[in-house]
Image 1 (cartoon, rainbow over the protein chains, first blue to last red):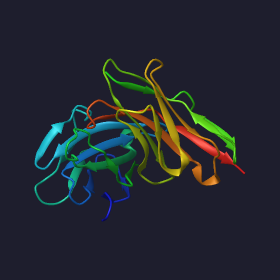
Image 2 (image 1 turned 90 degrees about the horizontal axis):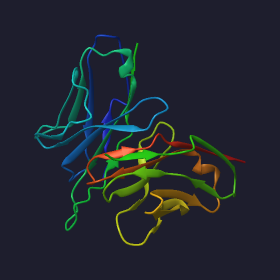
Image 3 (image 1 turned 45 degrees about the vertical axis):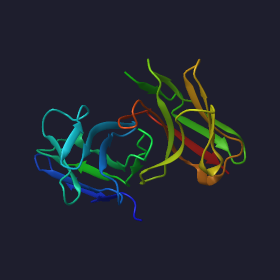
Image 4 (image 1 turned 180 degrees about the horizontal axis):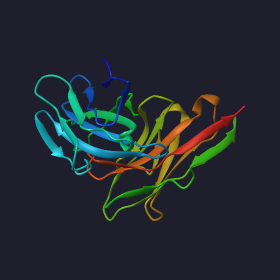
Length: 117
Length: 112
């Protein structure tokens, strides 16, 4: 059973370009979470999605950032018109709800390191 | 709102010595508590978690943590560290298991 997959692992963009980060959850997982890790900082929650639905986007910047998790295919985090401050590691996690509990253990992918020149 | 404080940004320790990484949290309600480890250029791996029950939680790689409700702490300990334990360690809290709040991390360096 493969773990959470993220690609690309490294992405370089020039200011003003678009960045697309992809996340394939673990098999059987229908919940996806995106986090951003700035240099020397911990992970900051961005958004929580289930298939075709955004459940909680309280951590998403109001502009330029969007996320989706379509019925088929990976979850996509999209950053339009990137700026240098967007340079960070972006981690995806996935989970499923174990029967009989409301706790979702999250399994993390290896991350995408975005560098904006 | 929940928040997590990891008091030590860097902890150097000699091989085979004990180590404690400190974590304090603030929350007005009961939370779930976690420790994750991040090796260079990798994602986070769950070390251990506290959901309920016994306050002493044992995790992988010989790590354990103790939940102290009165002190709102969840310190991570290992009696004897190895070189391979060199990594970044993150404490996290969650109210529902959906949204996690992470500390800023503690960089553990094991010295031969």
